[in-house]
Length: 482
Image 1 (cartoon, rainbow, N blue to C red):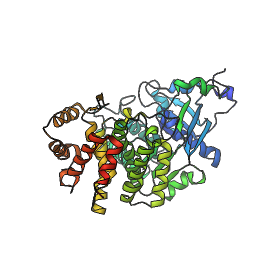
Image 2 (cartoon, helix red, strand yellow):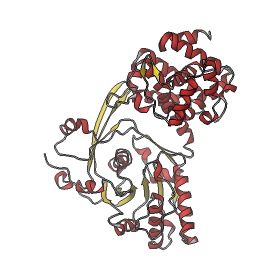
Image 3 (cartoon, rainbow, N blue to C red):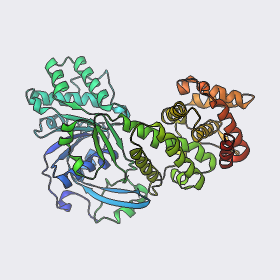
């Protein structure tokens, strides 16, 4: 079987570079590069991508060996049916390692048709490094590299406003573009760059906050022969992803015109404010994930799919989302319910095995961000407790005891949190344990004992858990409120 490259594939490499992309990893290739490939194929967008390796060790050399080509396999569940697709992505024109060829990196800034800067350098990538200098080739940080890149373009095109770039970071932090711009301005000040350059960055360039959503397991090394069996070439950069795709970008009508995704079937939403979409994702998708982990593990499930497929835990999670979480959100109810249905389809994806134990990491902090706001909002709106979220909360607290029915539980959290729970579970009675857990403002940023009836409900739920197990315990817990 021959290796994948443009000679073998008989494809040309003549697209103009419209996108500079910081990052060559699985996510960007399965998400952003795929999206621009769809734009090229369906709208004639004619955009080539130049990929910049953001850290010293990376995959640019392998990408160049395959002339920027790779195969994306998408698999998932849609409306209860399995969907699969494979596509050859061929819009990457070149890959550049700025640690080996800094001049080639700066030369990208001089590309006349360049319009967009995309990045995914991990959540830690958008950070300020006080040790970065203008003379470094390159600076350590991604924002430092981008500052030099923008300065090179500013000088080469003689401050032309038309040469400004549209910067769309995809790192998984809130307000990612705002944060990136703030750090760039900090470097401009630190390095003593001109006021004219600062003005150009602020007025010629635009920075757009984003929300990205797609599960990308990446290179399917355990099943690579099966994947290669569907191809007539050897591809060392195969990437697998779920079928679901959502990209929310803050922008106006002008950005929508520049990026005409509305002319494709891709779910790319250019909106004035992406925060409602972020809240929707955190509360529904992430919230359901977090709520199901202790519940599912105590019940005996191993994976997310096990949990949503089971007649009890699946119904529990479905009801928690539709009856308790969605009513607390301000977006259109139909849109929220459609998103929730997609989430449950994603959880059922047979091609992605999400072990509950592997997503139990930092469950306390996750519960605070993902579930607790829905619980508190529900209480405020309805003047009563959301019993499924409360029971899930009880399961979480019981989970942090560390054992269930003589078996060690997969606690994976800060050592101080685990040690503190051990001490709390050694208290002489359950009421004290629950009171101190709920009163720990380090965990929750507030004293949850002040939520009317919550402490008593958690204690009651844990007692039913201990006496009757998860399913019967939940039934008896709910019955006590009838």
